[in-house]
Length: 325
Image (tube, one colour):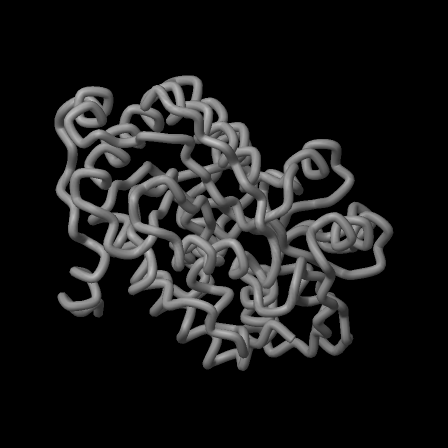
């Protein structure tokens, strides 16, 4: 249960109902280039979405929005910069649920994900398929469990302490398997070893794995998502396969944030611009191409989503003894 106090730490801005351009004129914001920090390397799905959002917001507000990739420490380096930035709306953050997940598994606590950010809105959620090499003997998740029982199979992840790690470890524990964790530095090397049958299974983002699934170079046996993914309805969710509620993961948010204590008038301008942008067919197409599912949310709803994700993730971390190193 999310306490009212924790909710109010985030939910301080009402829904904007007038155009962002007129609000910007009233608020006198923005007055210069906006820096949008993306705490991940260029070229990844988060970066692609950040650049698409930046361009659209720039058009909406009539001011340049520049994406600044500040990767490192599971997204904490760039996020911490925004947490310490002047709260005038000219430094913003575009990040995933790693905003709350990374600090929970790290010895370094560079920021408080609840107190140190002002949520503006979420595009939706990302989903993650569980895949095996094309040469795997398993065609279903049930067959994989049967094959894995009694064997020390390796599961690949794109990093220790990540969603990929947590839910494959949870899968192994739930089925009483003795699987071995093999962490990689990112999805690319993980995928290479899945393709070459060096690991028995892996879990990664849909945007990375979808082309391999479509080319039948890997086989998706399940998907970590609260709902089926359009175009891949043949891949069952863990929930549909009868797995417990922990596998009905509703984290994976991806959204826009400001520093703490963002002025109310600036927040309203940004929320109004965000609302217009995410309802634009061009942006919706980009979100669909990058497998962002669910529906966008604004400040108050995003605040609840973040706090809920943090609480659920903290329970997983404690249960599975997760750590980034």
